[in-house]
Image 1 (cartoon, rainbow, N blue to C red):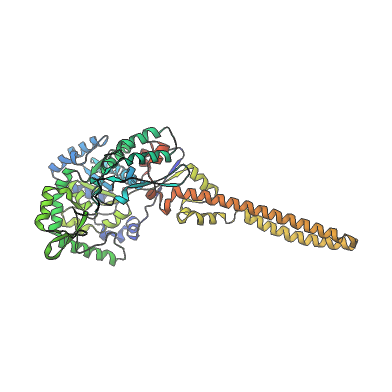
Image 2 (cartoon, rainbow, N blue to C red; image 1 turned 90 degrees about the vertical axis):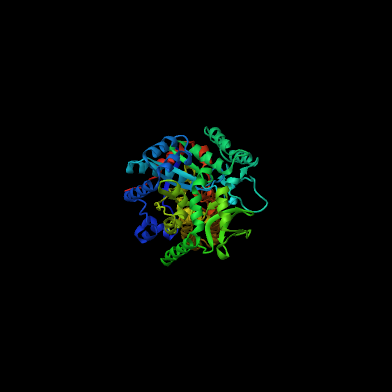
Length: 535
């Protein structure tokens, strides 16, 4: 337990096919042939297939390929020695480890590895695939944190090595001097604590001028998860690229039948009423080539030739094979082919993914089959909400749940204000006004009957009482408005913490402000809270 922090495990939201996969597996079983992700038998079959197809020389190479450090070294040694298996997950290398869900992927994979090791009786290690071959630098060059004034703040960096045009893969990019300013901005945005010097000091060692974007991410994530036995695998590692070259070559040589099979399978998914996560283009391969305009999709041109999407550069068979032989780092898989590469290189027993990965895993069976690689089950990552005590007190005060803030603080404030004290007072004041008017009228008539000269005094008394009631009502209204403004302000602050920019917290915020507040023990605490169900 962490004082002042409530760790809430939530259902993983997603598209209808993701919901069906989690809750009604038989409805989508045809698209996920590995089996349901919560059955021990699923993982037994997957482990058996992975071990059978992984030759001894690949097992011997795992020590290099998985790049273990810390607690992961001994686990990898046992996997090699006893022919164990690997749980994989991954993400692009975001700034300061990116959004929270990147960390939750890593923790889920580590927990699943622990559970499967116990249930299967085999050594199991978790590996995080750092997707450094992606090229969308605008997605990974920033992070959002909440500053000391409860305002959402964007911290952004610029990379060295960015060409005038085009988008090179992320492993080509390095941090410039501005990364120090980014760490300083994080320092300014977070409170002082006993943990802060060590936490941000370690972060600054990873995110330093001259450091590679992927290397910094891997170092930082390895640092905060060091007790969990997690391997950080950099996708552009030369040994990985060399061993994956045959898969990339096969993908090119058989591009047309593979594309046709993927399209037919996608049509089946759509026929069942589900949307595709990744659109299938018949003239596009599942490969990228680094050309004059950076990393470009390799398309199938006329007469079987290839061409690059943006530069229109022609790529023939011989040239593509030369790329693979001379510099395999220039040829990279797309999002669909990447899991195939991972399962071809490692004895993968399971893949941990979020909603997007689960959805596109439904599209992958024909691609795995085309490469002769067994498809592993995809296990939903943990979805987590971190509710700090100060935010929880605000919600409790106004009887608002975190889910109430999903539609915005304004709507939640209006709902919270309904049935509050001002409405009851307004009703009471109306009753008082009615009763007073009736009572004063009776008094006035009785007084006039007694002494007609007192009519003026009776009228003045009636006016005085009515004025006093109006003044009280005005003061109550003013007070209610102030309270509602305070309610809205406090709920707006709570919404920034739980739904920044209208997105779930895990997609909008970063882990390091929480590490500054609550220390490194937060990571193993989170891992312990993640429940992996294997029945």
